[in-house]
Amino acid sequence: MLECEMDFFNRKKTKEYENMTEKLQTIIEDGSSDSAIKKAAQILRAGGLVAFPTETVYGLGGDALSPDAAAKIYAAKGRPSDNPLIVHIADTDALPILAGEVPEKARMLAEAFWPGPLTIILPKKDIVPDATTGGLPTVAIRMPSHPAALALIRESGLYIAAPSANASGRPSPTLASHVAEDLSGRIDMILDGGPVGIGIESTIVDLTGDTPTICRPGFITKEMLTSIIGNVEIDPALIHPSKDARPKAPGMRYTHYAPKGELTVVEASDPESASDPEEAKRVADTISRLALEKENEGFRVAILAAEENSMYYSRGHVITVGSVRSGVTVAARLYAALRECDEAGAEVIYSESFDGTDISDAIMNRLLKAAGQRVLHIS
Ligand code: AMP
Ligand code: MG
Image 1: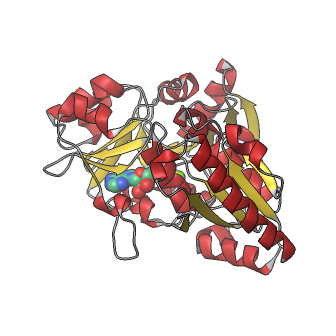
Image 2: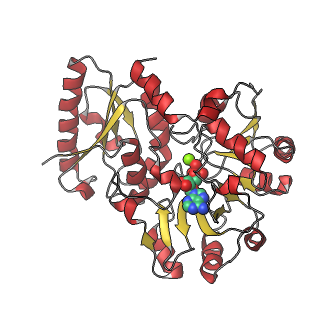
């Protein structure tokens, strides 16, 4: 490992992660098999950890009402314990059991978007341990739509706390093999459901304040939420990220999703013109020039490009990320593409911008976080 890579891992991982000496035998089973779901449910009821597919990314599940299970999740991921977990449910009846107050807007959103990629933050009841909510008086709740996730929650009879099933700081897993890469030997079981559908984490909306606020953008957009409950704000710290801005969702404060190489997003003069072929060519020319310079300095370079632009590049290791005409295809490939940068040993990475696509708030939020907000605007 290069020194900068060692530094990357040392920076990202907690002491509990480093000190975890017990090596578990992680079994991988087919998430569509009834017997595998039964086995996974038993493991969860016994206090163990199971990674399972959801429609957004793979989750790392444990009993949400057990502080010990929550502690195991944090240790396995190397996740800071002040970064709360989302509680997954299979029935809206769970809402008044977990949340102290269930406002009408929560019911309306649940009716419109559950099961699906929306997480709702509400005041918590005492039954939800502080270990699960990172000490917060609120709880994040979601009903996923993936059949394996729903089957597992029902079969276990539990509420399942499940953050993304990656090692903390790594891109979220969109394949069972990504989970195995990060967490083998640290968890009891992986349910393999093949590639996930959406590819980026759920939209999080906080309903505990005066105005509903998006703490993390996702597949469910601000417009979709507004159409059901009226005025919705986006956490200002997400729109203008800076060292001083403090995002409402603790997880959005950490450098996340990062590949090991240094990633820079290269943006056209009009950031929303990503699908204009002339602008795309100008961006590609700039990236090609930068890639050549870095290769001449001896660095391994990877380029993240939309499918329709990949032909413009003759330098660097080109990794395609969906189409600029369809944000959902970009979302579905983004995390796998970031992991492929690591596999290619990329030390320097340039990415096109995917602003201007549908769900671009969600995509650009993840991409810019992966880039540590490094953006090069071409004039
Ligand atoms: P993950 O499950 O890995 O996608 O991470 C869960 C995300 O939900 C993190 O960004 C957390 O900070 C956020 N989250 C969970 N519970 C709360 C809460 N009660 N208030 C604000 N954000 C939360
Ligand atoms: Mg995560």
